[in-house]
Length: 128
Image (cartoon, rainbow, N blue to C red; front, side, top):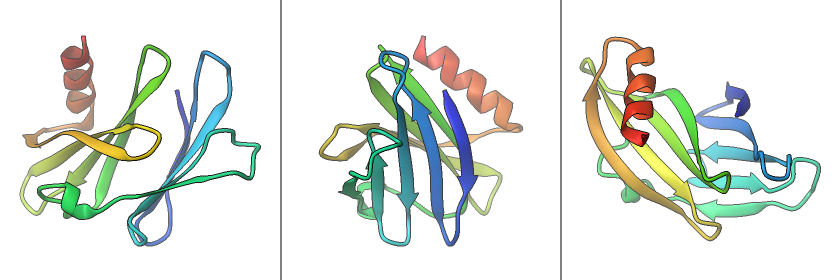
C-alpha cells in the first residue's frame, strides 16, 4: 500500500499511498521543519492540501523517525503510524488519522521493541 517512502532532507518524510477503491495515488509529505503535512489527493494533480501540525498535539515528540507505517480502514480512512527512537531502548509510537481538514492524533504511547518486525505484528494483531 505504501510506495516510495523515503527520509527527506532535515526531517521531511515523503511517501505515496494508493487507495484501492479508485486506484488514485495520494502523496503525503510530513515536513517537521514547517510543522505541516502537504497532501496531494491525486499524485498527477498540482492541487495540494496544506495541513498545519503542531508538535504540541503530541505528548512527547523527540528523536528521529525510525519507521513509518500506513493502515487502511475500509479503503477510505488512513492511519499514519510514526515511530520515534528515544535515547533509551524505548520508542514513541504515534498514530494519526487524515480527517481532510486536520491530522488527528488518535493514539500515542511508549513501546519497548527488539525489532521493527515485532511492532508491525503488534499493530496487525491490535487492528484485528
